[in-house]
Length: 241
Image 1 (tube, one colour):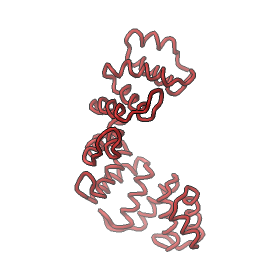
Image 2 (image 1 turned 90 degrees about the horizontal axis):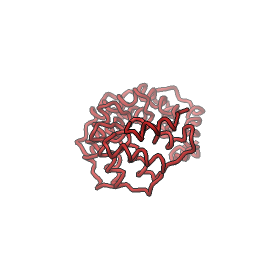
Image 3 (image 1 turned 30 degrees about the vertical axis):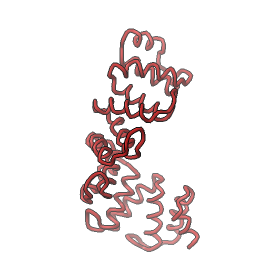
Image 4 (image 1 turned 180 degrees about the vertical axis):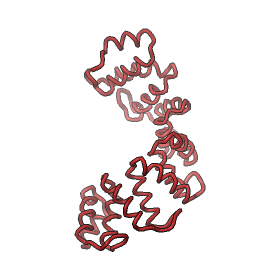
C-alpha cells in the first residue's frame, strides 16, 4: 500500500514522479478512496511541467469525463503533448482521435502517422490498426504485404483482433498464398480469446470442412459462442443449422 502522506510531501517539494504516482493512487483508488478530482489535481501539476505520463493520463481523463467535464479537444491537446515526447499510449490514442474525428478534424493520414509511431515502438493495437489501414487503403496506399506484416507483429504479441485479421489474410490469400490451415490456426487463437469474428469464421470452416475435417457439432459450438455476444451472422448460421 502506498504511503500517501510521504508521496504528498515529495510531490509538494517538486518531485514529478511522486506527484504522478499520487495521481495514479487516487485515480485507481489504491489504498485510498478513489477520487478523480484529486487525481486530476496531481496529474495537472506535473503535466504542465512536461511530464509525459501525466499528460497522457490527463488526456484519458478528458476523453472519458473522469473528474472533469468531458472534452475531446482537451484530450487531444494533452495527448499531443505526450505523443510529441514519444509516449506510446498517447500516440495510439491520438491516432484514434484522428481516425474517429474526435476533438480534431477526421484525418486517416494523421491517424496512420500517429499509429505508425506507436507501432514502431511495439504497441500491438497500433500495429493492428496500421495493418487495417494498409489492407483497406485508408490514409495510405493499399498494400496487402504491409498489412500482413503489421498484423503478424501484433498477432505474435497476442492481439485477438490482429490474429483474426491475419487469419483472414491467409484464408483469402491476400499478401500471401492462401493457406487454410494457417487461417484456422490464427482464427482459433483469436476465437479462444473471445473474438466474435474469429469464432464465426472458425464455425464456418468447421461447417464447410475448410482446412479441417467437417464437423457440424464443432461449427455450432463456435457459432454459439459468437451468438452469445450478439454476432448477427453467427445467429443466422445457428438458425440455418
